[in-house]
Structures are given as structure tokens and as C-alpha cells.
Image (cartoon, rainbow, N blue to C red; front, side, top):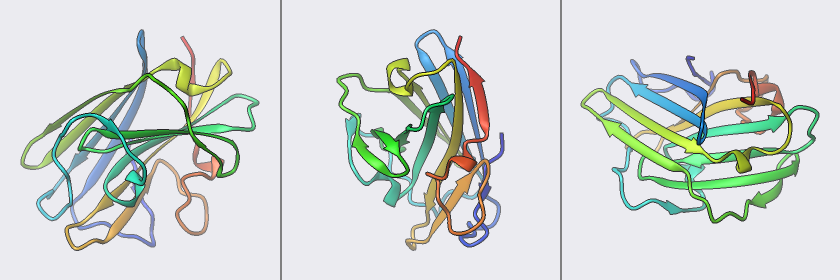
Length: 174
């Protein structure tokens, strides 16, 4: 599925971003494919996997998920450096980091004109309900420090990935 840049934060010309979500036995697998002229982007190379705050301030791939009839929602941030963070919110932007001893499995592959990040999220992170509403998003940073905000769908106004109107992908649990 193609992610779209927010009209108020245009990306460098020629960039394309696709994201996919599919159930695997281990959990929910996410894949983000960033293609185009990547040399002008700030894409830190893979390092040791680690939990880190503030990933959304730089290049970061994100997923938001909400169980059916659930007031709360979750968020996961995944960086090309293999850093990650997961949050649980009981209401709009009200919550914090989810306590977990389980880390996502993250893989990054890069070429001259493409970067692919795959991650498998444990089912325990995804909250209740047999059906999930998911928002797939990304923040892409240029070497000059400009940010573009990408999503499957942007509600009106400023970029706001926490707006549940952007959780447009629906998946039934296996």
C-alpha cells in the first residue's frame, strides 16, 4: 500500500514509500519500502537493536493499532538503526511507553535506491479485539534536517498520526 506525504511537508522529488502488514505465526509483520534518490536522506545504518525514545524526531517508520471497540491504541516506532519503541495510550496521546521484555524482530536491507525495513511485532503489544485498525506512517528526514510526514491517509489539518481517522487498514486476527 502506498503511503502519501502530507501536503504541508513535501518530500524530496522522486521518493516513494510503501508499507504492508500481514499476520505471521510470530505476530504482525510490517514492511516499509522507501525507494528513490536516498542519498539526500538521513538514514542511519543498522546498529545493535535497542529501545530508544524520540525516534519520531528523525527518520522513523511507525504503526498505530487499535482493537475493535477499544478506546485506547498502541504505537510502535522503528528506525533504520534498529532502534525501536512501543507505546500504549488509553486515550488520545494519553499514555506512555509499554513495559515489555519482548523486543520486535527488525531487519533492514538497503541498496543504492531502496531501503526495506521489516519488523515482527508480538501479539501481546497489539491490545484486545479480534479486528485491528492500523495506521501505517513514517517520518523521513533529509540531510538538511527537513521532515516529511507520510501516511496511508491524512485527516484534515496538520500531520497527526495519532488521529484514529488515519487508522484505515483493517485486519482480522488469525
